[in-house]
Structure formats: C-alpha cells, structure tokens
Length: 114
Length: 113
Image (cartoon, rainbow over the protein chains, first blue to last red):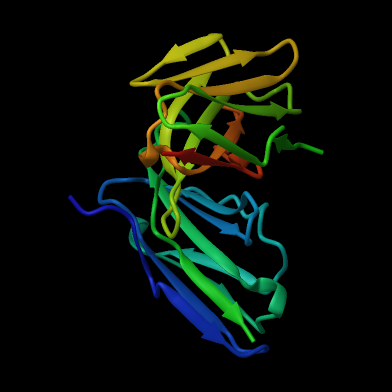
C-alpha cells in the first residue's frame, strides 16, 4: 500500500510568485494535516481537515496561505505572493479519524523562495 | 502560550548504550503524547505514544515515561544502534480538541559506532 505522497519534492520560486503544494493521503484516511518545518526547527501546525467538517485553519500564519481538500482525498496548500520567510519544508500527514490514531507523514516539499 | 521543548538539542551515544531523550511540555490540558523519529530527508515517523492515564509504556527497544506532575516526557532507547541516528520529536495534543498536535524543537541523536 502506498503511503502519503507529496509533490513536488522540491520547489524553487521567486519572491512574489504563487505556489501550490500537493498532498495525496493514504486511501481511507479521513484526517489530513499540513505542517511547516523550518531548518533545524520542530513542526509548525498549519491546517487540519477531518472528513466533511470545516477545517481547523488556526495555524495558518497569514491570509496568503490557504488549503483545500477535494473529495475528501487530495489536498492542495497554496501560498500566494511568496516571501523568503516562507522557505521551509512543508509536510503533509494523514490518519484515520480519532485523536489516538497515528499520523503518517509524507516526505515533504522543500520550498525555497529566492 | 503552549510550548513543547527539549532539554538537549543533541545527544551522542555509543552504539549499544541506552539513550534517553527528554522533553518538557507546558500545556497541562494535554492528555496524549507522541514520539516521532525523523531521518534526514524524510517525514517524521511514529515511534510510540502514551496517554495521560499512564506513566510508562514500552515498545520494541523503546520506552516512554510520562511524569504529569512536572510535565516531563522521556524516550528511552535500549541498545542504541546506528539506525537510531535521527532527530526525535516529542509532540502533545488534547484529545478533546481538533487533534492539533504541538511539536517540540527536536533532539538529534548521533550514534557512535
């Protein structure tokens, strides 16, 4: 069975451009999370989707960040007008419903904003 | 605010020795704790978890200890192997919330052959 996949694995963009990061969760997992990891830092929670419920967007750092999850499966994280401080690894994780279910992480997308 | 921190940013141990990685948390409402291992270039991988109604849980070569009185969590790795070299994160969450998980900064474990 395939794990969580993310694309692209690396993305280099210029300041001010928009980027889209994709996450394909494990089939059947209803929960999906996005995190950001800066160099040498821990994981910063960004957004959480659970089934058809309204997402928890409390971790999004600014209104330049948004995320969608279509059909309860694939998710896209969009960063508009990228800034240099957006440079980080963006990790996606999925799990079955319920807080005690293990989160499975993808390999991440390394975003570099020049 | 909420925070999860680690006492030691790096830890070097001899192969075969036991490793202990510590973590402090500040949110007393947290009732579920997880340890993750992250190898270079990969996403974090679940190692072991513990609920707040327990103070110890054992897995294969790993043990997690929880001291709610002082809000302290530790991960013990027995007979550390080179493959254990990675960054280890503790994480906390509250089961009554939106499953938002707060991660610590991480400890880098280096195993000396």
